[in-house]
Image 1: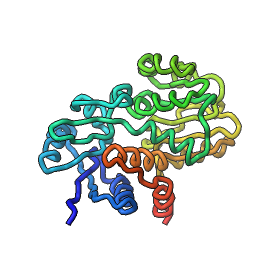
Image 2: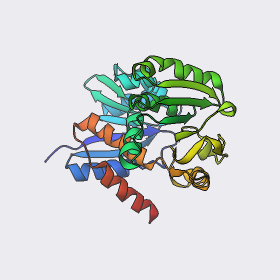
Image 3: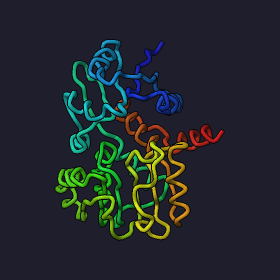
Image 4: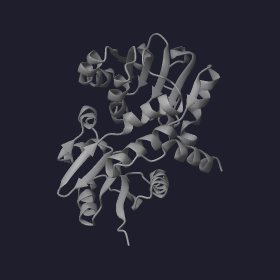
Length: 279
C-alpha cells in the first residue's frame, strides 16, 4: 500500500480556507498520494507548530496570515521570489532542512493572463496596498514586463520601501515603477489589483473610480462575499471585476508543483470550485 504524504495549511484564522478542498482535487486528479489538512496556529506558536508537524512526518505546508513573514525567517533556503518578497507561503521539509517559496505572485499572474485572458506586457498596472500580499505579487508582476506599475498605499513610506526593494528588477524589465499615497493616485490603468484588507473589513474601495480605464480588469485578492463590494464597484464603473479565487487555485497549483513535481489541472479545479461555491 502506498504511503500517504501529509501536508496542511497553517494560519490564524484558517477555518475558512479552501486549500484542503483544492489539494484534495489535485491529489485525486493526478494520482498523487497526498492528504492535506488545516491547522489553526496560536499567534505566538508558529515555529513550534512547524517543528511538531515535521516531527509527525509532514512533508510541507502552506502558510497564510499572519505567518508569512515569520516563515521567511525560519527557512534554511529561500527561492528567489520568496527572498524578494521577504515572505513565504509555501514550505517544504527536506530532511532536516526547510525550504521556503512564495507562489502568490505567479498564481496571480497565471490567473490574470491565463484564466482572465489579460496579457500584462506593455500595460499600466495599479497595485493597491504595500503589505505582505502586495510584497508577494509585485516581483512576478514586474516579470511580465508591464509598461508601468504604481504601488499606492495609505502609508506612503511602506509603498516607497516596497518599490525600492524591487527597483533593480523593474529596471531589468524596463518597467516604470512608482509609489504614492492612496490620495495621490493619478492617471488611469489597464489593471487594478486590490491587495489591501479593505474588502475583508467591509470598507469602501480605497481608490477612486477614475483609476479605471474603460474595460479595465479590476481584481480583488479576496473571494466569496468579502469581494462582492469591490466587484460591484468595478462593474458599476465599466470595468471587468475579478475575485481572488483564480489566484488561490493557481498559487496552490504552483505549491503542488514545488512539493510533488507534478502540474495539476488548475483550470479544471477552478471551474469545479466556482460551481461548488455557487451551489
